[in-house]
Image (cartoon, rainbow, N blue to C red):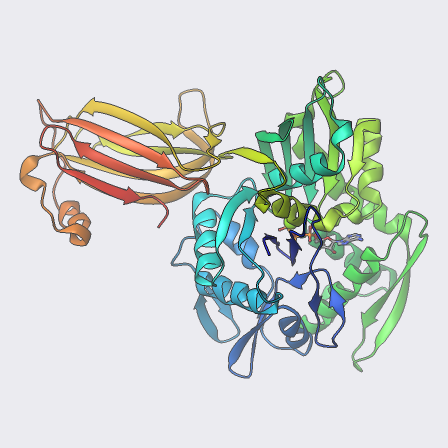
Length: 498
Ligand SMILES: Nc1ncnc2c1ncn2[C@@H]1O[C@H](COP(=O)(O)OP(=O)(O)OP(=O)(O)O)[C@@H](O)[C@H]1O
Ligand SMILES: [Mg+2]
């Protein structure tokens, strides 16, 4: 069975493809109860790693654990060598993710897969690359990797095709997850979608609402966080999360268990209004992050609606505040937590008739040494509006006469460039390539070449060779480059993900 897997910060949700239906798959917890998610938790117990519900139970019993695999993947400095500590263990983040996805695969029904998977729209290249690698190493065949909001856009147009008209062809996807907030403008023409723009906040999600509720509970009880042990804080947050998820638009009061020293709990009653007024800042932050995309919504008649997805949109405060700001065109997914997974299953289903052309949500460019190494120039290669091809590859080619004995290229991703083309905001180092323009330096020693060339001083050279760089981007948004000296025919190919 084809599936869609939404690997989330707090929960991983899987939907299947079943003759035109896209059911959400269930997982059993340690008591044998079924849930429509697999917790994104890893714990160290009895000398081994455990995952999902087993890890959640181990964590509750005080085992060292990690709840933030995806947040760590999203850090701008994360690369394939990044390690993480779980208790005494120092492990490669990439291995932890592979182990987690392997456990997810074991927990799926026999024969589940191949899979469409997703990453946040603002994921940098290393995150895309490491996520894809981990799925493959865990034994999944990955048929597509989409940006999460594009997947949610599929779920919207599949479910509400009538909201779209010849004039109103755009949807703003508002995705409030456990740890991240993303909003994207999706162009939906018939069954073909394109993401026109996307902004994300890497540290805004449902988890933050749990933290706010915990503070409200502590204040009502006249206690402070410092008075709780680590495991007690975790239990309080778990209980806050459960109480928050039980809220309906009619709820007035909520009860949360505050852990006490004797191992029991003290029930604390708080007014829902008190929680909402403390949490409204978080929703307001999501609204201001949306402004660049929807600033002109009041006048813009091409937008069919704002679609609220992500488990965090299940909180009644969210649709209420978004409607206060944007009015009637706000719709909430009937399955906010599963919308992305369902959209991925639709994308994996060849019979659904949907296609997507995604766009890189970050620019991609290269720093080059200039003036014999005395300066650095930045060349944008792909802009953030560049489409990601649905299948196969598209190519950007550059030709120039080399002015040095060596080309030293440092590839980076950036969130934006300023007026003079210098990258601004987050920068993600991606790969470093040293290519010999001087024929005397063009050996065939493969892996050792970089080390050998790094020792050669950069010098200006007149009458250098004609060089061609060919950039290839695949359906997962991963870029590779082939650099060729067209004079001597010497050429090398470099994958820019590793
Ligand atoms: N009914 C509900 N009401 C309020 N919040 C809910 C509800 N159901 C789930 N949530 C919250 O949604 C969040 C998880 O959402 P979701 O599963 O979309 O996130 P994720 O995919 O794990 O994270 P991310 O998208 O950031 O990677 C959690 O904070 C959870 O408490
Ligand atoms: Mg999500």
